[in-house]
Image (cartoon, one colour):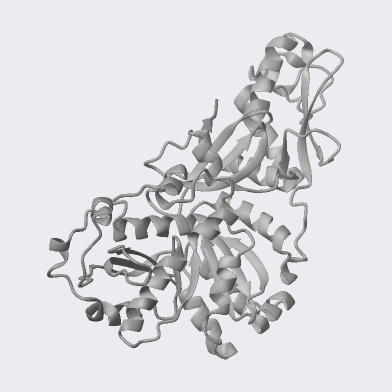
Length: 455
């Protein structure tokens, strides 16, 4: 659990500042579950430059509660939380100083989004909150007011969680948590905390180490299956699990890609039986001695250039049968039949005669090339746009020159085709044949996905 906060002060000498406004969002790693926002009477004058910066003046604070009147609420909303702030050292020092004046020793663990940003989003021109969130396409309102800056920090922290592929944020949170309950009641408690959403889930043992990673369109139901199954792997998971964390993705494609990437990166002990290759067949193209482009579904061979890949021969054959119908291709030149002369489709006028050289190679090959271009993103710069985690958000899968670059999330109010912003929000990921297979398979099954071609 996190308490994401921002504090505005009077300014002045070190450790003599007073709080003028505070905003705290209690954040469970996925959504805000509580909030506290208040002006505070600092019982001292505000420095003029601070008034100009924040717009908060002494008259506004005359009837505001004093710190001792809101102290109990601050303790409650930050209980069992890690304090998260942009320049956390400053905000935490101010809080501790105010509590010290009341004779209370206020202690919490902290995370600084400045330091996290420098680590996870390197090479930014500036790491000040305003410039950083603007460069990342994060909407911000009421800049230099506690509520606006705290909410911007919430959105920034959510982006940093996505980029935290080593899961250090999650692990630090687990290690600060309480000792888990005994096994039987623990499973029930874990299930109750999980949502029925699309995403990636991480099963941890007691010291926080991840022992299994999975993806699901319904995380709650899938983890429940792990806890009730009787196979050997599930029994081992049931024995060692103490926590389950998750990352909501909204998009099943994002969940699939993150699962592959993070299993490879983190190598959880109970994912080792996962097959590296989740496809067995591929679609290939070649020209025959008469210059016609032929298509063939064959065993996958990494030495050959495949148009697209399939989990098995049957799915490849079905794809080719659909393509023959859609593009008026020849059954003979797709390897689906081997007639000596004209193919069956020529007789019913859906093949235009390439099988008997009645249609020229130039005319026929145009349609074959159209199919190839549609099902292979080779040499293309594009974004695949899918569901996001919230109603005003979308996910983006970035393909550059035919190579998968990574993925990210963006707010609908921001222009995603700004390449500088795009490359800032994208979490870099490895491109490999498994990734290509997952993307191509998903595009075949979800024909209404929005594709943005980039200049």
